Image 1 (tube, one colour):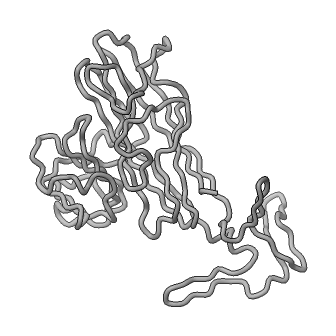
Image 2 (cartoon, one colour):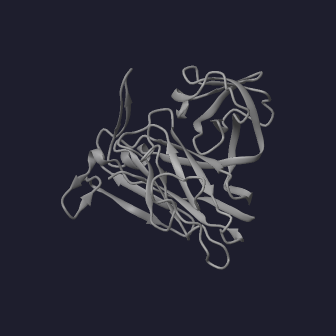
Image 3 (cartoon, one colour):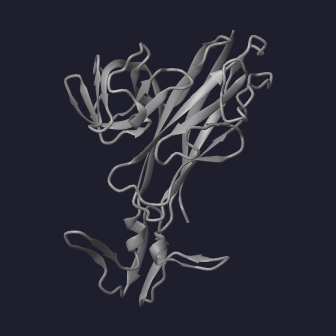
Length: 305
């Protein structure tokens, strides 16, 4: 027997000003420029900081039925937002479900205890290496019917009425995955959901980077997947992405010390966040060295430039 432990950490977010006002060349970028009569980009004292401009003309926010204009030198500093959430499967809150509707964004659970409006959830059909996953954020709970803002992932391929006994709705509220005691010949999976919300016109990219291979205290590693598929009968470890903004969706990607993109979009998300599911997969052999295996995986979100 072997133990596998994977710790998922949320880390970095980088956001710059909007590119709509930028001037660029091969080697330089000016986010925005203006000619004014005074002010200071960065004024500070012991307890306060200020960014001020004098002489700005017609600055402020103007709106109509279909448009909004943020005018002025300082407008880009307050206009851009870039937020994200990365959460793994809860160890204690889950429920079997009896009906699923990708079009209506609903799932009917056996018990809604522990689920609340605003929570991120994953709906899993057939909990194995070929599972389907749909990720959504709860907007309403009426009895046993949970409604989400939008299902991202494999929802279009999932059954309206699950036929198996391993179809489950999981609350996503943890920052770690614990595979527990691992046996050869058994598929081990756990899902991580991401949620990205931004109004940056050029979009965003979300990256992962591990601090080490999945390894034990003796630096013996579980082999990272290299052929695009984590398979039983092999010692392999990786993660599959699913969702409309997932990078290389449907392929099992290696999770290593080489940074790689897992989610990306060339446009803002609008009012509903982009979500993907990352299904971490692990398979071992009877010859796999025993021990407690671990790694930290860092998620970094940046605006596209």
